[in-house]
Length: 451
Image (cartoon, rainbow, N blue to C red; front, side, top):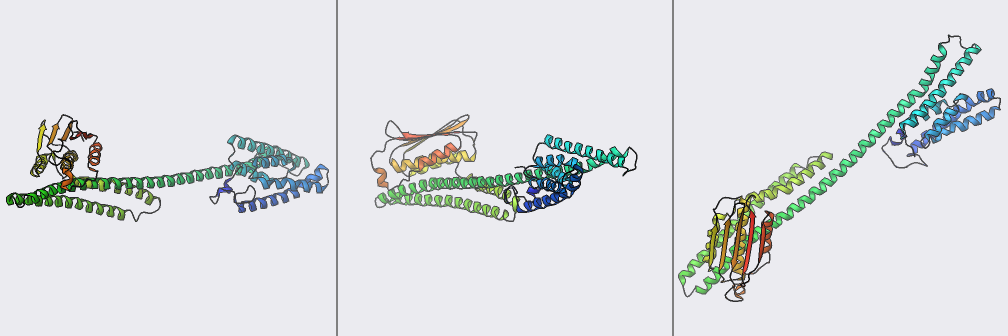
C-alpha cells in the first residue's frame, strides 16, 4: 500500500477506515474527488464523442469510468497518473491529472519513478496544448503571432504539472520528517523508561549493599565487644567469692567493653540518620520536575540517591578503628584471659582509612572466633607491611578442652568468615581460612596497599 501526506494528518498509522483508507475521513475525501472528477470527465466526454464520431452517451460513460479512477489514488497512484496521461489527448481529466500528480509526488515511491511519470505528463500536456493552439489559430479563433504557440504550450504544461508535483514533494518530505521525529520521540521515551528502570535497579542494588555493609559492621562491633563481655562475666562469676579484687577488675573491664560497644553503635546510627536525611532531600528536589525532563531527572536522582547513602556511610565509617589500635585490641583479648602473641613485620605507614578499617576488622573478627570456638587456646596475630600490600594472619592452637566454647555460652551466627571475605574481596584482596594440620584454625588476608 502506498500512502500520502493525507494519511498521517492526524498522526495515525493503522488501517482505521474501510479497505485501504487509513481513516474514514480519507475515504470520504477520495469518494468526493472521484465524483467531481467523474462529472468533469463526463461533461468533457460529450465534445470528445462528437469529434470522434461516436454517440454522446458512449463519451459520457467513458468519461465517468475514467474519472472514477481517482478513487484508487492512494492505493495505485501510478495507475491514476497513467490514466490521466492516456486521456490527455481527449482533453479530459484535468482534475484527475492534478490530484494524481500530487498523490504520486507525496507517496513513498522512488524519485526516479515520480520524475519519469511527471515528465510524461508534462510532455503529453505540452503536445496536446501545442496541437490545440495551432488548431485554434488555423481556424481563426486566435489571431496572435507564431510566438504565442510555444509560449502557451510551455506555460500551460508547466502550470498544470509543476505545482502539484512540488506541493506533493513538500508534503511527502514533511510527512517523513514528522514520522522521523515521532520515532525519535518514541525511542527517547523508551530509553528514558529503560534508564529509570536501570536507575531503580541500581538503587535497589545499592540499598542491598548498604544493608549488607551495615549488618557486617554491626556484627563486627557487637560480636567482638559482647563476646569479651561474656568472657569477662564468666570470669567474674568464677572469682567473685575467691578473689574480690580480681572480680572488681573484671567488672570494670565489662563496663568498659559495654561503653565502647555503645559508643560505636551510636556512631553508626548517627551516620544512618544523616544518610536518611540525604535521601529525603533528594526525593523532595526531584518532585516538581515534569514531562520528559522529569523522567530524566528522576533517573539521575535515583542514581545519585543510590550512591550517596553508601558514600556517606563509608565516610562516616572512615573515622573507625585504625591499625594503630591493633595493640589495644590484642590487649583486650589478653585481658579476657587469652594468650595472644602479636608480631608486626615491616615499617608501619598510613593507608587508606577503608583499608586500615578492613584489616582491623579482620583481626577483630578472627579473635572473636577464637573466643567463641577455641576458648583457652593460644592465638598468634601476624601483621606484615609490604611494598605494595598489607598481609595479616590470625592463627590459634587447638583448644585445651573440647566443648569449652559452649560452656562460655557464646552463640555463633555463621556470618563472621563470610563478612571478612566480603570486606577483603571488595578491596581487591585475597582471603583464605581453614583448619591447620595441628588442629587449630587459621585466617589469612592480603590487601593491595593502593586501595
